[in-house]
Amino acid sequence: VIRVIQLMAHCNPVSVSTSFYGNRTISTTAFSGNVFRLTNDCNTAVSETVNWRHNTYFQKVGNTWTHDTMRAPATTLWAMEVTRSYFSGVHSYNGWDNGNSGWRSNEDALFCGGDGCIPSDPNNASYYRGYMWVGWGNSDALGDDWNSLDIIGHEFTHGISDTMAHLVYANESGALNESFSDIFGNTIQAHQLGSVANLWKMGEDRNSGGTSLYIRNMEDPNEKNDPDTYKGLKWHTTPDDNYGVHTNSGVQNFMYYLLANGGAGTNDKSWNYKVEGIGIIPARRIAFKALVDYMDANATHQTARSAWLSAALDLYGVNSAEYRQVANAWFAVGVCSNGGEEFI
Ligand SMILES: [Zn+2]
Image (tube, rainbow, N blue to C red):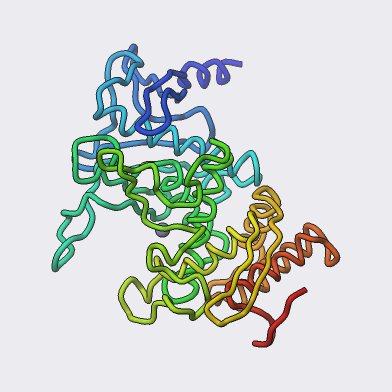
C-alpha cells in the first residue's frame, strides 16, 4: 500500500500548451518538495526528457510549464507518452524493448554537419536503444522543433524494429526499417488525433511561419522524390544515406497507405492495380505482426511481402479480404510472387 501511495505521489498530471496540439495533459515527477521534472514515472517504462546541451533535467519549482523552453520538452514528453501508451494498449508491447525499459529524449540536440561530424545541425531527430535526440530547428519558435507526434512515434518504432526484427539499417532492410517507423508514426497520430488533414505526411505539423515542413508523403511518395514502386523511377541506388533508407522507404509506405485507404492506378512497371482499403486498424494489426513475428535482419521487399502475407494469414485467414488486399497492395508497388504478375 505504501508503494502505491508513493507512485501516485510522483505521477503528477498537469495541462500544458503544446507546440502543435493545443492543451494536453502530461504527468511530471515531483522529486523534492515542490520541485518538478519533465519526466513521466507513472509506468514501469519511464519517459524522460533532458537538456542535451547541459545533460540536465528540465525542472522547476511548481508543476507549471509555460515558457517556450519548457513547452518544447513538455510537448515531446506528451508525444512520448502517447507513443508508449499506444504500443502498450493496442499491441501489448511494453517499452521500446517489450521489457518495459524506459526511454529518454535528449532535447535541443545538434546533429552531424560538415566534415568530421561536427555537432552543428539542429534539424533532425534520431534514436538508439532507449535514447532519442530531438533537434529544435533553425528558429527559436516552437513550430520547427522535431517533436511532432508522428516524428516521436517514428523514433520509438526504431526500437521495436531493432529489438524484434534486427533490421539492418542499410539497403532494402534499412528502407523497410525506415518505413515501419513512418507507418507507426502516422498510425499513432491517427489513433490519437483521428483522421486529421495531411495525416499521411511525415512531420507535417512542423512549420516555418505556418508553411508545413513535412519531409515525406506516404500517400504520394513521388511528391518528395521518393519511389512508389519497387525499383521504379525514383528508386535510390547510390551509397549515400545507406543506399537511400529514407528514400526507398516510400515503397512500403505507399503499400501501407493503399492497404489502409485503397486506391487504383498504374505503377512504374506499367502494372494496373486496384486496392480496396481495409482500414487503418486491420492494416496496423497486420503491420505490427509482420514486423515483430516475420521480418528478419536482411529483409528485402520480396521477403517483406511474404511477412505481411503471413501476418494477414495468421490474423484473418487465407480467404479474407485482408489477405487479398495485402497481396494487391504489394502488387501495386511492384512486388509480387515469382516475379510474375499476380492479382488475387
Ligand atoms: Zn528513422
